[in-house]
Image (cartoon, rainbow over all chains, first blue to last red; front, side):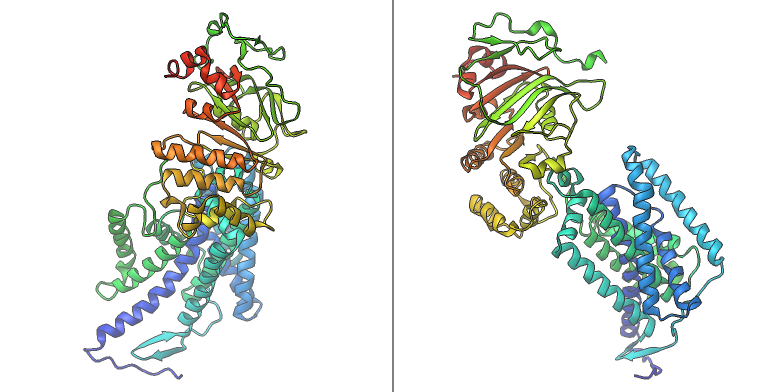
Length: 305
Length: 282
């Protein structure tokens, strides 16, 4: 379908805008969700708040840039490369940093500081390799299609389509496969998983691969959607934390729902207030939601005993 | 650190008139004599044997100070004793959750001392912790699947057997475990632990914090599981009810064995009743 101009009559104005902002919201919400699932799983299983997760995403974006723009390969190849690269990064950090530190009995605070340190190291390596100049992936950002009363850009279709496929895949992994169920079991209780005979080391390894891969994917999609700078992931991280808290800490499905909800609320708010306020609106909604559901949207009543 | 030292030595039951007072000659740190209240308790072929366990959670503080435990095939073994006697520590040392400083643990003929818990699980012994013993956000069915880590081949058939044993779990198989009542939760925890078909099941206070009706259910469950051929080693606060179904009982105090005997014999022993069961039986 060729792009065409849409004339908006005053009667249809609200519907159009609602549809448009919904599409935008799903797109940005998907990116939050993809980033949030990995971060939430790692936190739930290892009690590690990985501040480097945002920079994992940034790295995914730059790997895609290297493959897509520098090497001139198709976007699909670039996405695959980014997912693999960041999954490997997750695995390597587990082997070289997190597992040895856990063995030495590092506490919550040490691990937190380490992750912040790792975040800075990654960001500066990115800065060193690709400079601070903003980059764009080689995608057509002008193509768009009219769908009834709204318009959807090629980029939005791409982002939503890929994210939806990935999120469905993760959902199936977590509910249908043994390793996925084990991840949820470890999130519930690491100690019980251990005494039940679950190979916790193996599950943790897979969790880093999954979390890293999803972060890589989220990074590429964020780069497709906006522009790529070394601070991209760090900026997104705040929203991702909000998505996790909104959905219910430690619950991967909560992270998904929280991410989408946050994206939608932020975009919908632009119908009523200046777009510059959308971040603030997102957090206002987070606070409101937590007032009524302190454990998050999908959170459960406090567990005791 | 002296405040953490277990019971003082002068509480030893020196004047116990019970038959065959025996001091285990292996116990070097002993300052309390063990009293055996039943004859013919010897086991030719024990399925589980813990010998002279010494140790605790940190190197400086020994909670166990020479503990012994034997379980014969098909028995219900009950460990009772006051708070801080080292009951939970004993079961954790047996299951490899803490490594004893001294002493050995044998499962059949294999020395499993210091073997990590998640490997012991595959060797024919399972453990049900006192709290947090189910995965709350997983369904009942998924909880059972998580118990089958080591043998996933016959998993579905084994889950079916568990549903036969606990029909109530089958009714609620799609429900999350967090919605279960206290008694049902213990049932699920036991069923999960039975998934790898263990020959020995370790239970840490299965009736703790349950309503009286649920307590009765738990003891019923324990008996049923035992009838299916599984040896049970169980810690209990609810000493009377537990000893009533025990083939063998141990009274622990200060990390050492104080009384050993058949469940009924311990229940009927005036000293055990006086010291640990809150007065003579009815």
